[in-house]
Length: 176
Image 1: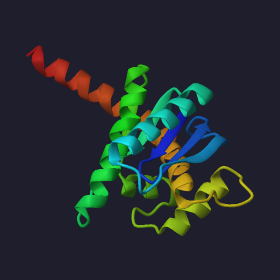
Image 2: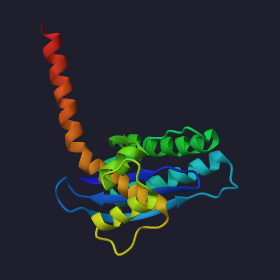
Image 3: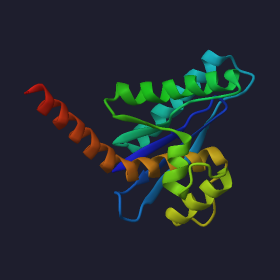
């Protein structure tokens, strides 16, 4: 499976492509950051993210796009920009008919490090180890995008089985 992980942000939108299947060694195909100028208008920045996303989708042809689920308890202004960048990534994938998965930061941290409250440095270190890289990808947004892709590869089989079980249960209940 080839997954494009997206760590959304208006200034730096982390992107990373990972190939693999659960239970086997994973391979990083590409990693980077889509950047937009902080002084530009929001609409202009979103167009820049759309261009960058389309370039990544064209170049790497993922089967799935995994995007960080946006949430915030504090800074509403920051979360708005993150949510807008997230929506652009999901829209670009959906226009191509690609499935989009969303994972919370704690799900990603737990999948990659074993702890849902891991620090960014721990995530970067585990991404480096899991993908057999010589150094953690920089900036942290790039490492986070790879962590999203890894999380999806590892969680997708179990989520698929759970979804199938729920569908079967609903069908069984509707025939009574």
